[in-house]
Image 1 (cartoon, helix red, strand yellow):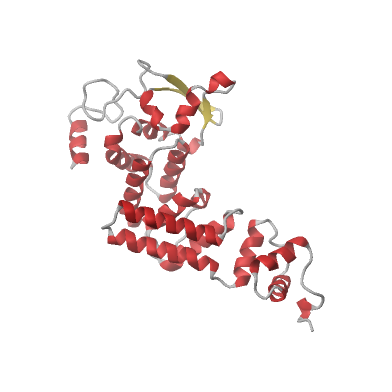
Image 2: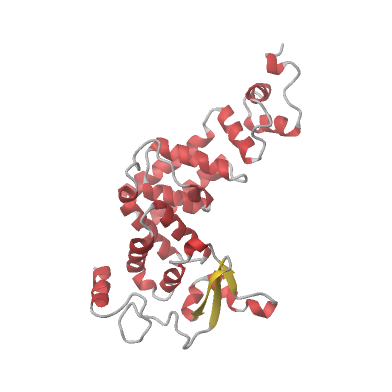
Amino acid sequence: TRCNAEKRKLDHGGGLFDSSPGGGLLDSSFGSAAGATWTLRVDFDGDDSREVHLHREACRSAFLTLLQDTDRFGGSRTVTLDPAWRSFFEPLMRILYIPEAVDFFVEQLLVSHARTIGQALAVSHCAIYLDLDAPFFAAFYAAVRSRRRRWSAFIDDDRFELPRAWRQLPLGHALRWLHALCPSAHAARSNLAAYLAAEPGLSESMMHDGARDEEVASGAAEPDDEEATRGWTLIVQAAAAQGAQPGSLRLGRKLRREGLEGRVSDDQVAAALAASEGNVDAAFERLSSGKGPPAGAAEGGS
């Protein structure tokens, strides 16, 4: 395979991070001052600042391209990254230089820097920040999928819960993570409920539409992958189930997203739902506006 051929080149004297010319497919100008178009200063909360020489290949990232001329407008070519990204931000940028070797680089990246789901989530957060392209993420999620049971012995348990960092991903990537890990239907529903609770501006319908969009995109990219198709069917059903949960659960989640949890009692929630004939949005409007249920409703009304 292509990856094995690339690995053989490494085994015969080439290095994964070797920038010297003439060493084969994996060599590139990354890190070399010669021919550099611009220099990026990377800071980790004031610790271990580094300078990275970038070339035209880095323009595959729209984010890095924007930084190229930012000093003309009084900006800075300095970015501050999460200290947890320190060990792999340069390998991620190197992938921009050799897109034809993305499968190999992703494999090496996960072997070296992502031995747990939490560490792999950190890699994906950094890759999203650096604006890596679609081929990288296609290879990345395929690699995540192949490691699902290696990373967690409880991946098929209904109580499986993804780390908090997953709930901080953009919706599309959160859904692709869930699809790659392929948890049980119950675990998919509970994790999506936790994601909804953490995203104040996200509705159940938006989540369902996002899942459908990802399903369609996956079908176009992998029309013959029956396992991937079944996985997306599960995710779409789990997303749809968020809107079908009992009104009290949905209303409680909405109150939590808006920071109102704890300000109203369970009796007030039940009374507001009853007064609104089960309409969650109307019940939320009553509780958030201070109108509350009609007089006597909390005690059963008349």
